[in-house]
Image (cartoon, rainbow, N blue to C red; front, side, top):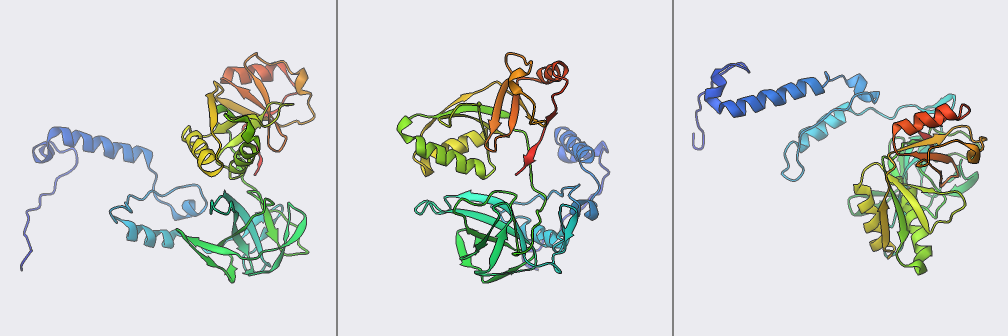
Length: 336
């Protein structure tokens, strides 16, 4: 047959010295090392653990070369569950038997820079959504009408007339939604469990270069923080002209600088800080000014007014707790 070739096959056991002759000693040693790494770092696949969120499957593919994409999509569909009940306090909201409800999991500003729009993304948790329906925004405490709901696919947008549990829709956000908000039917009043605020590991002092652009700076940095990419902290009694920004990775500082310049026309100056750890103060009634702290520990507040302490190392945390017996600290903040 034209284009067909016959090849010889040789089966050997990994670790067999004869493999050196086949692929070379260096390549054989590297192969064995990588196999050992996979054996030590991986766990046996368990679909129940994946669906419980306790195990994350890893796929090796490349969208650029179209390698392994189709097998990934098929396997992803196989592992995906239908919409499940979601906890709201002491009750579970059934995706089929309950009326419409949704959970805000993402906020994105400047989806269209020309219009300075802002979108809130909902995951429908139960019931049926219909365009223009009146719903209850639990955190806002008022009824609203969801007009012009959209679904996005890359750069394309389409208006949604109806959607069901498991679907994702976006709506125009005039600034009333936050990550973690619950939307339900009028007459209902429950809250889905929110998303915990994780402690950042890198900190920078950020201020605008041009003081005349204070308004744009405050708007831009606040909107980006509301998206959840960064966290903003202030020293008590000080304004927003200069803030402390916390991030999980240093790349987020570069993204912040780029977005402020390109979306809000604001240039900033960033000063890296030596803080490495942050803790939320659990007992809000405590007098922070009376705390005995090391000189390099700083008291700050987040955008919701919660009190936090910035530390340069673990020793300072231990020192603060040992010298302030009434102080209670948490690695995680309140829910978003």
